[in-house]
Length: 264
Image 1 (cartoon, helix red, strand yellow):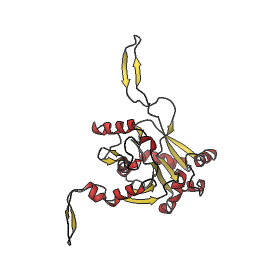
Image 2 (image 1 turned 180 degrees about the vertical axis):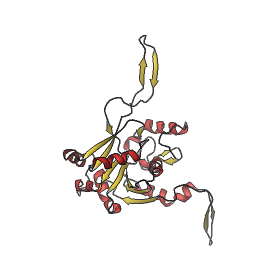
Image 3 (image 1 turned 180 degrees about the horizontal axis):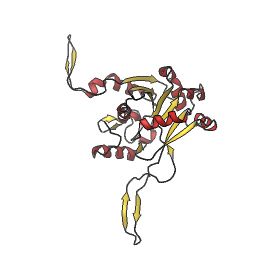
């Protein structure tokens, strides 16, 4: 039987680099296909049995609240009867009947470390929890990630990924004729943080009371200093959505039915 963990998702950033896609909704609500990238991410975790989510809201957080408060209407056909005996009758179904979503307002200007600290109460006494960003998808094996985290006994595990190349990669033969072209290959050298963290509750000992605390700076450096940060290496698909081109790539993968994160 699988261990099930709560999943904390950072959803509060402004996403200034992707304003040419949408500037009237928060970045996690930008759609991939018909539904927000946040939904795709949550659906992925739920596919592994992790269906209890804590969303750290900030910039335009009410938009995310509205989506989940009206989830039935967004995802099902319905008949609305108006007037004194008003009612709503739903017809079609969705599969997210057992999701639990905590919508936590962590402040419009709060930075990542402050946002994590502010949702501590919703984790209660849980020893471990997932943590990730609301603007990227992957085909990471969450079972293997969690097993790795528990095996080394450190406070934080970060997923290391190969950064996608920003330019087309050409391969040529000895005569200068192109033998292969990859529009957006995975880089062959080095690892970067891909998010998809697993945390022990002792992580909160590294988060002080400042709203301007950046999780990826002081806290993570302190964890490195104390030898409490481990990396799980993932060399398959990973893609953040930082730019218009990233958004196009994810939508194209979905349209072609080649989206590696869609395992449901």
